[in-house]
Image (cartoon, rainbow over all chains, first blue to last red; front, side):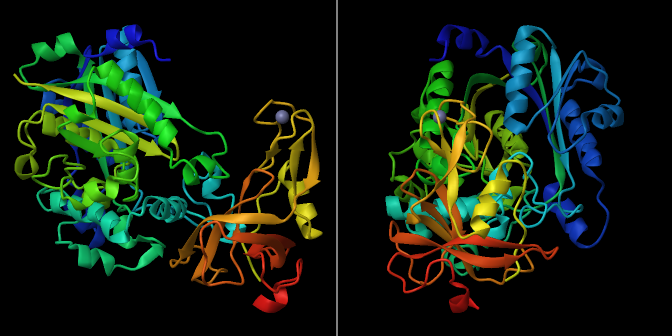
Length: 394
Length: 146
Ligand SMILES: [Zn+2]
């Protein structure tokens, strides 16, 4: 059982004060025209420059650095010219968790979290021979003799069983891609801004049945940076900021390669355990969440998170999706920057930036009115982490 | 039939040696009887390393499947069906579903072995799955899919 007293002592003590992102859509268009747009370090530097400008701090204020998983931490510190008294390397959600813990413990006061990727320019393959991630997830490559490869195929297997057990239709699932495209159309930096109707989606070819091309994430290049510091220091900056209110995590790795938690549990026990902790620490529940960001390499992540975190009952996500509540103007806006499907595939980093923008009421046409509580849910192959954020107006 | 070669190593080698002989054998823990897959150094239930390579019944049920429409390997033409099969001894195994184009969840299946060749010319045999009532001789479905 989580020690709620210790967790609650951390809640609200660390703030996100700055966010910076590259111009995903414009960069993607230039890249497609054959123009070089820089490597992952270039995108990281652009993002950090913008994040520092966003909060009015300088590089000299940074005494902790978390390097995203796609870059070499030594080279990143060198490129950015940052020496620190604390450093780590982590994916999007663990970066926030680790920085929060480090700041709370006094190991650092102001931490820059920096991500950059040139996955498209570099031709990173997410399936087939030498598939990315295979060194960390055996299931991505182990079954190659049978032609099973790619994270998408593994989620397609899940979706095959999940749709059958819940009665969800492909049309209902398609509502995820449609809702997120509607948000992307309101976001000037989204990669995919052409209209997408449910009929358009259903006319897309399958990649791995039952998942279609528009159920899959984009592959594009860019960078994201966040600046975290103590709540006290955040209050001294003359800017709105966002507090880390809750953290939940649960890893279910037993039988991971043989796919039992994926195909027989749909990762629900891991999601429930993470939900229990994140909501207890934050002192609230799913009904209090104004804006929700869900890690969405594939559309099917969304119904799993909606059910796993209690936004609806098991098997009810299809109805919730088709109600239109996840899209612009809906009751539970999800992936308001378009997510990985239509916005930008920054491996969850963009989702963090977006929740901050929403809670600071700076999200332009896609702004969720009055958003105060935001949540991020990340489940990659049964490694579930969630963060609850609260916006503080200035 | 050409296929990507299997990953080999200390724990995987016995699996593929038995498969080459047309046998589906998995590690059974000598201490608690748990059957594990993929092969590994210790029992995930009790951590005991001691094990035997037990012959499986060859029965299974279709847990889930996906049809690949995008080619990921040049040697495997699309479309093809990948199935996750729950075997009564415990684990879930992956294979291609052969002998039917009308899969149904939980349908009973049985294991058959199919000859394959890796890019470097090494031969191996793949444990594949057909409907339990399919009229395909066990261990030699290659004629039907040649
Ligand atoms: Zn054992």
